Image (cartoon, rainbow, N blue to C red; front, side):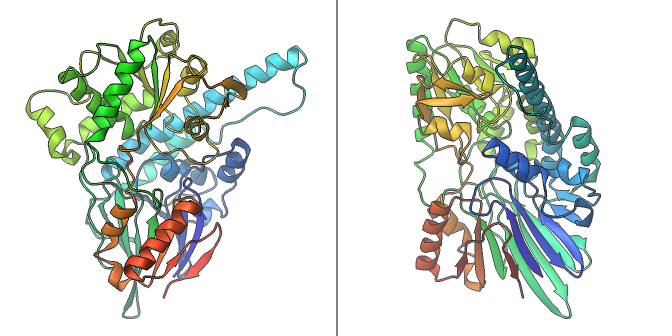
Length: 471
């Protein structure tokens, strides 16, 4: 069995790993790379293999940096099965079409602006921007999904089987244990996907993998330790109250899947506890609206705290002050409001979608707050905001960052260093090698040192295109 790393190698986004055995090729994830616009376009549109040469995909979860390039794979000839949990398949049905729609609309906006500038002589060269894939491409990808239950042994190809295990990262997320059986012997590989944290709102806690020989392990927060989850509500309440008191608005870029629903649930609890002022709360993302409906369809995946809302006859994702925004007209109207409000909008890393318009209309006003609640990859607009650049580019135009920036890391769906070390404890004794992915170099080196110091297990940090033989 050969394993090659094509994405999330010494970076956080674009999860993409390929297994080759007996003439078959199986992908672990097929995510979008997010970063500098031109680099992202180049990497996402030019896969390092032909789609028609891939036999199957095993998908850990629905986040766009893990699933978002499946339509490109389809465009380039892939017609094999995409194995995922049922919740992941339902989420991808909404997310992939939305990703395509956002690309189409962003390209339309940029092309109109380019045309206007050409007309007044401000811009000359450059052809039109085109989406990576269309809504039609996304729709044609969806029939390839094969819904697979947790713990169910499933054949990917002849001689290769896998099982899904609860990852505790988001609704439907899974870690994967794979086994190749050949000639009376077996090679066992674990793939963490993204490992969550114990006690996160809504979802179940992560569970350990069975014994494996090799492990592909995420390392997003490999150099840090999260603050207790209890601190989240205090910080959230203080941010909302402080901004409202000065007459400002709160712009909360949030991943439409998982983070938006967590924020809504926490704000619902603050409302019930009367800990925040009575200001309007908007979820401005058609995808988040659709995804929240998917959450409601999978109550079996809720944790005990969220189930209590249901037992009391209450909707955890709905309350009097909350409004879900679907239409473009309603979204645009929010920017004309002159009273305090909070808007939760995608994308989580501020790279596309409606949140860009909210940021463009808000970041230059010191009364406002940008509330960052998730990891921001290197070179993304969200990262520039977190690092408080004096100017940030929005739709290619520099904007003065005068708004307050508040960061809440405690909601992170990624385990920290201590939680990762604890998660691998049950299987670490039999591991030949741990491959660290889905992390930036500083975080990966810190986690590698901690693993070696704690367990003495060999650790490898693969680069893009690096290949390894597993035997």
